[in-house]
Length: 249
Image 1: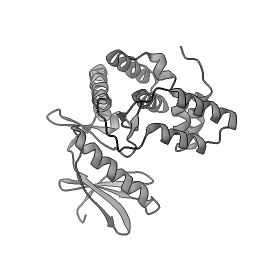
Image 2: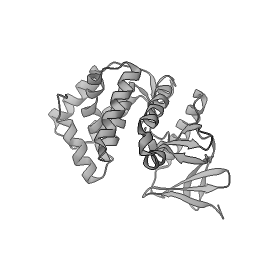
Image 3: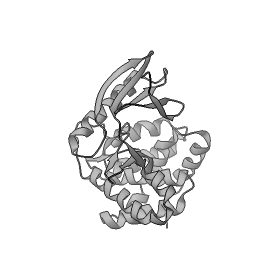
Image 4: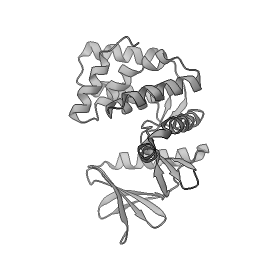
C-alpha cells in the first residue's frame, strides 16, 4: 500500500490501486459483519460465470478492514456515457444486456431479496398502516430466485480498452424477483435527476425481457421505502414521495 493510488473516496470507504490489485479500505466504524458479508457475496458471484473482479483476501490495514480484488483497468460505463452522449442508446442496450445476464443466474446461498426488503421497511419511519400495506404488497409479489445485483448502475460497470465489460460492487447482491432490481435501478437514475434516462432504461429493459412496465412499477413503492433508510436526507424525502404513489401511467 506504500505507493498505492487513491481512486475513490466517500464517507465510509476508500479504494486504492496497488499495482494489479484494487484495495477497498473501509472506515473504522464500518461493521466487520458487513465487510465479511460483502466478501462472501463476491466469492459466491465469482462462481456464476460473469465478468467480475476476482477476490483475493480480506485483511486489516492500519486497524481498518479491507478487501483486495483484481484491479480492472478501464472506464466506467457512466464515464463513457458522459463522454459520448451521442452513444447513449448503444450504451443503454449494453447496460440492459448485462443486467439480463445477471438475472439469468441463480445462487441459492445468497440472502433473499424479500427478507432484506421486509427488514428495511420495518426500519423506516413510515406509519404502521403504510408499513403494513408495503409488507402485504411485497408478500404478494411472485417469488423468484434470480440473482439481483442490488446497486446496478452505470458506475458499477467497467469497460476495458478492448471493450470487455466487468460488473463490480456486489455488496448488496440478493436472490429474488428481477423486477425489484430493475425498479431500484430506475429509482437510482431518478435520484440523479435523470428522468429521461430512467424512462429510456425502463423501456429498453421491458422490451428486451418481455416484462410489462406496470409489473416493474408495482415494485417502486416497496423498493423506494427500502432504499430510503440508507439515503441522505434529501434522497430520503424524494424516495418516500414514491411510496405514496399507487397508480402509474
